[in-house]
Amino acid sequence: MFRLTARCVLALLSTLFLLLVPGTASATGLSGSSVHVSAPAEQVAAEEADEEEGEAEEEAFEWSYHIGSSCEGLEADIREGADFWEGAQETEGSGTRVNCTEDMIQGCGDDDSEEGESEYIGCNWGDGTISVSTQADDFPLIVAHEFGHNWYEHSDVRCMGWASEDAVMAPTMC
Ligand SMILES: [Zn+2]
Image 1 (cartoon, rainbow, N blue to C red):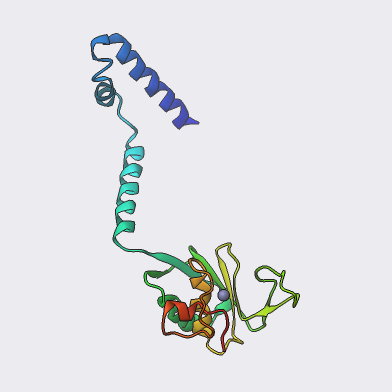
Image 2: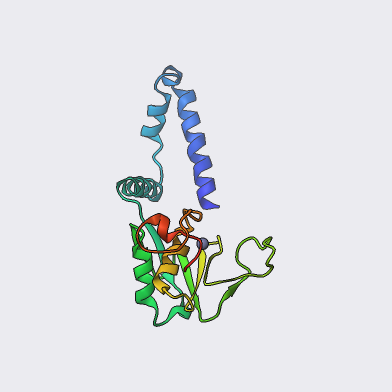
């Protein structure tokens, strides 16, 4: 509320300034108001921070994930799967969340398959969460695969493997 009010006052001041100095209104109106109406310091700082972030993103692609408490003891395998994709940043609570289970996973994806309810060893729910099952023969690989669904659909490769991104994104572990 305070901010809104402050901005309204600033806008009024700059309008007044332009009215009082009609000769500068058209060509130099903008520079005139920037001299006489300074933005709040915190707003300027925020804008500068935004610019720095933008530059960082251009330099290197980074993505982040965090490991849920259900994955206790599996952290090393999850990091191995995450690190397949360049720029992986482990965090305390932001980015894609990893949930672990010892059971098969149900209700993943479009269940318009004629088999009805299918069971999976992993699922990327599309809401910033992945679930991975320790029943996978290669647990780090299913982790890499489900993270990969953040960007990719399944590939045409038949069986999952570590050889390439397409291999990781194969639809089945066989
Ligand atoms: Zn998949």
